[in-house]
Length: 192
Image (cartoon, rainbow, N blue to C red):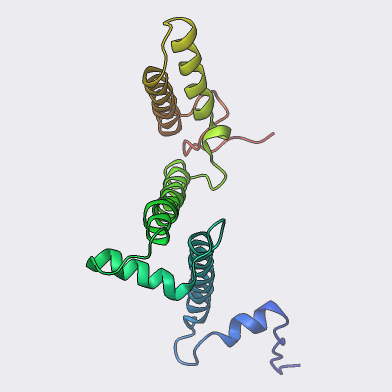
């Protein structure tokens, strides 16, 4: 039997081969563009959710403002034009600043969490799991009990404790491996 028999690709192989070009055999950028599109869709949905929640907070509540009134108040405030008594104060001095600061704080928390997880190379890292929250608590309690600190001094001690523990964790994670079993030193081990 000199007939060459080709095996039919099944399942995953068939899908992978469908993405290869006829000339080069390289993969088409279908998967990367599909993944990028999925991430963009998720981001767009979350951004839309933030805008909707922002509008709900500003427009609804104990004092309800209609959409045309909101824009009239906003334009009047920016241009120094007509103001609606009571409503201008509630929207521009109470609701809108709180909503804007809430969005800014949420973005800052998201960015800091992403930076924290990227820096530690751990997608599950958070300050309470790693120990930074405990360092801040220990420093604050020490400042209160031993030094009799109050107010801003306690906050400063907590910040110092958190930064100290963060620096210690970072140094440990970048330093040489502790113990005999950790790390990849490039030396093969003999097995039994």
